[in-house]
Length: 395
Image (cartoon, rainbow, N blue to C red; front, top):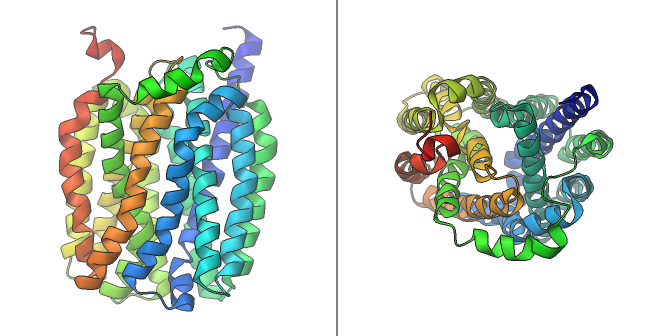
């Protein structure tokens, strides 16, 4: 690789980090204020789950289109457009919650649509950079996302403590996201599958839905997406409602979960390169399962915090490694990443109403036990993510 090419890869690496970090900031800025939005709207757990379902509905709508859009227009344009639309949508949530449920649901649907397209596009670009570097660094990009979520959650906890209105907090965070991301994407490398996309992207996208390995990876990602998403949506609610913490303490528990995910994603590449995807993911699935059970059955808030830490650590690598595995073949990466992301986001479609329904009939904490069953399933699915050379029998 020439010096100019190396400089281009380094610039693209930094730009990809920016897109992951600021998507995390946007998500956590909204998630940190869910308890206040819930209280303003007077929602039960089940009703809140249905409202949050709008995010997943938007994402699932956009994800089947995302691979085609990236193949046609490139990840640079898709991410930039997603950032602008997301900013408008979350601002709509922050303003609309003062007027009722309907404007919130509409804005959350648009937010989910923008997030789904942005997610696929930045993962495709991350896979391009990972191949150019020749190292397993996908999880570090997702660690950037987690850094953004931790920063957003901590800022959210501070905003709650200081009594900053939801509208002021979320709108300011969204403007920051757009201002950072739109200029950054100009440093993206051209996607490897874009040049001949016009002739082949539609058939390739459809064919990816018939590939057994791609579908198994998607089911694995679904399991970990539900594990991650349940923590993001419900940890603060469970700590406040079931463990009797204050709103700011519940938000700090949410931040601890995200911090644990960040640590796992940052140090994960060394473990993946040394021990391989299968062993590392199995160990993390068991860790996440143990943490979830400690969180649910812990008799006090401090023990629940310890469970949240293990839960976040265990959930850390499933989604990013699933994206990396889907992108093992650079030519088919946009289509396969789109399929895997579409399946994975079904967790966000079914998860909120399922846990909310169980929360109404039992408690939110007990409802989270539904996640444990999918974590057990994910352990059996890990061989599908084995590195290409290992699947071929090479060292």
